[in-house]
Every structure is written in structure tokens, then in C-alpha cells.
Amino acid sequence: MDKHNVTIFRPYPFKAGQKIYIEDGPRRGDWEVVGVSERKLKLRCPISNREFEWNRFCYFVEEADNSPWPHPDE
Image (cartoon, rainbow, N blue to C red):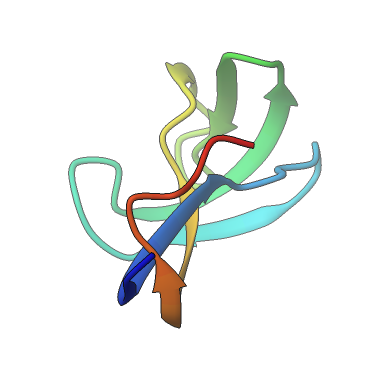
């Protein structure tokens, strides 16, 4: 199997109480995580205290050199 440089995404394991900063995009800014479920993420704005619940959207990213692609079934 050929080896490639592959970018890997996995859901970020949020925990209630975390203070986060989203660097870019429509949800850019500071947030506090107030709720986490398998599919949803509830965030509170520290300025307005308004809460928003969205489908989970943040992912941890890494690049792996010399990785198989496409990935074999696990």
C-alpha cells in the first residue's frame, strides 16, 4: 500500500466548564462549554451570557507523514 501525507480529523473531547476560543468562522470568539452530548455542544458567551446549542463542529487535527491512504478498514 502506498504511503502519503494525510490530515487526520477526530471530534474534540469537550468537557463542561472548559473555556475555549474559536479562532475563525461564524462562531469565532470566546466561549464556555456548558453542555456536551454525543451530537450537540452547548456554549455560553462570556459577554452576553447567551447560550447556543449546535451540532458538534470542532475537530482536533494532526498531520501524519508516511500514512496509508486510503485508510484500510479497521
